[in-house]
Length: 419
Ligand code: AMP
Ligand code: GLY
Image 1 (cartoon, rainbow, N blue to C red):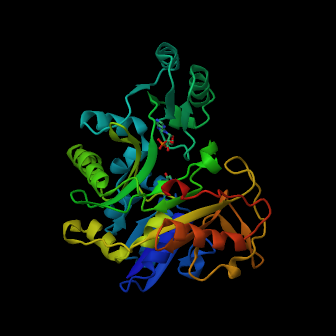
Image 2: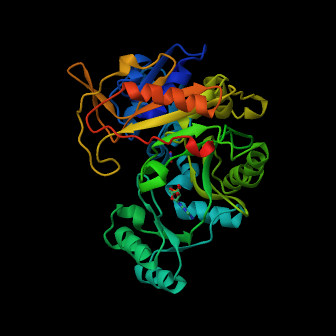
């Protein structure tokens, strides 16, 4: 088979790495890919959002299966365009991916179908939202409805912070049209976990639960990022809790989407808060998490391509998904300044000294005159498997110690919450 992976970050490198192990695969293409991916796939300079360009590529190279990493092409209708052209895609239609593209839609569906989530109110009118926040006079979370590269969610501990967030989204239009609608929701307290699942629209098979580390600094301090590291399996989601998440959240959501004429195929990602009243949904995503994909895929024993074909062909019920024992940890190495602005083009050294059993997934890298340099905020995802979480942590940080670039920073406590 010929497989095309869309995207060019750490998640896509992990996807390509896992897909490359499948005996079903002859050739992998990646658009646009990155220098790490280039060791395993033919990288083609087509942007992940260029649906027509991707369609032309898939036709020209006679791609058998296209796997979509990021959310943007899904919400833009990549899967719909490919389906119209008779091409197989792993990833939901635009109508189904809208559960990530519109927080209001996701919340309304959860409310309508009784899926546990924070209480919320939505607004299109700035003055009404302002009045509500002042009247409520308690901590809340203010969210831009649309996609905002992970920055459109502001946790407000005071009314002042909530009003500032509202101004940023609705008055300054910091996220453009993503801020046409805002969701103001109850602040939930607890530990967070990510449960991703494969689904063909009927059967739901959860993956190993993972935990992300969103804040930039150790001890969950500082601003939110795309994710500074992750590990799996997260012990706080034990077998019983995972089953509860499957039965009260994932399966009802998949049924709800089908009932609403938005049949869902692909990876459904539930970002959860584990509250004293049980798990509640913070957000749904329409794709693998990044960096959660790195440790989760490192632990996947089954052939990912077989699973993806079962999803695409609607026969997931007959598919087994098996996992390696032990645990995996991914530590993200970031550029100075990230998650704010940062320089690019800084030389990276030491990759050749990383222990061979450590996986270094490229997230934001480029080649400049043969030299590997930084090209993003999140640069590398150093990932290791171990017989348990401490062993995986130890090995991942042994890899990290070998790598350096000017301004490199990373969290030193990835996985510690699990201990
Ligand atoms: P989201 O993109 O909706 O997952 O939000 C990003 C982050 O904001 C989450 O990972 C949480 O840390 C936080 N967050 C979102 N909604 C809530 C909530 N209702 N209560 C507490 N924290 C939240
Ligand atoms: N790591 C969070 C996300 O992928 O949305």
